[in-house]
Length: 155
Image 1: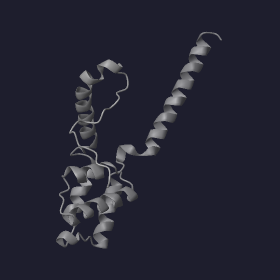
Image 2: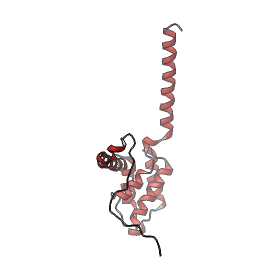
Image 3: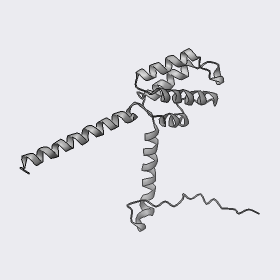
Image 4: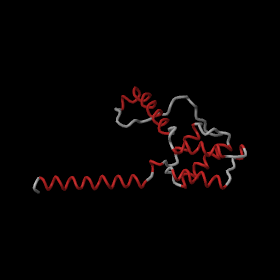
């Protein structure tokens, strides 16, 4: 005999941060919809996203139907093109793997499942080098500003 848990159909009780204990029930459906909407939007790739563009190119280059084969010379050309547009070689290979897997599962590259997998691959804007450089520039600018204000105030 195993234990049986009845499915009541009710959503699990969630504790929302910043909501008074008595107000949770009135606000939580609205908050849940907002969170669900934001999650959907964050996983969507724009039409001009390099990962989306590259996935279309890869899908068009696959041969063999569900076998989803990619000739080595075509793979090299695809990766070189993706690198020229700012995608790292490793990330280009990840996009190829996602597209090949989708083809083998008979999923379209526009399906939500495939798009969410592609969204996990870092895009051009996700490059850590650029973020680090911008952060360093902001820190230097702040330090110079503080030094200037200190110098102008005479202290």
